[in-house]
Length: 300
Image (cartoon, rainbow, N blue to C red):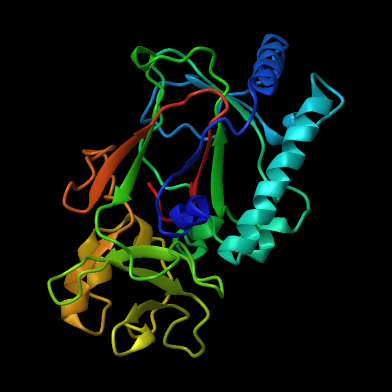
């Protein structure tokens, strides 16, 4: 129960020894063998924020080809992860997590070169914030999961997952998305007369010519309410400073409380520091057999 409460609240959930050592060792041998066979590839999109080819991935269509390598083992691990998805679907009320189909669930091996890193990012964004790429795929990321295969890891080797969790408690039992599918795009900061943080969601199904989108938030005394006039979707919602979205609120006081899910990145600040007022950094050690899960939208 604690694991799912952490995911629902926008925190990182950690389960130690989710896989036994023998399974971890066999998976690591499989990952190493497939690396030696040249099955890995560099990420398709190089952001320019990091050196090229420092991170390599055994992509899902190869990972789920159970005719190569230790395919039978990978198939058993996928089945075990399917059980986790089933538990997530029930505990988080996300029924789509147990729907199978082509590319609905991602499996891969990832290998980092010495000194490699990933810049801070959120794994998923609202489709209306993706420009021409929006609504192109039939699915989205919901819960991100990682299982570590490192052999005798020590802190001097680095490689920790740095997650940025909000300092103030959330007002809702679940963040990231609403039960009817609207994704979170930011937060209302806690204030003295409302000492909880309130997730702000983007409703992109509004009728009428004024615009298909509106901001949505659960507020004391108002319940689940629209907090902006309708407007037309734009990828500017993803690449603009806070004040652009703040101006959309129908209540200026609420607008001043709004903060994006992660700090805006610019050419001059490609990896800006997270605001210590809002976030506390949490480093999760990549110890062998550890399962890590978090909401794909809400956790940078």
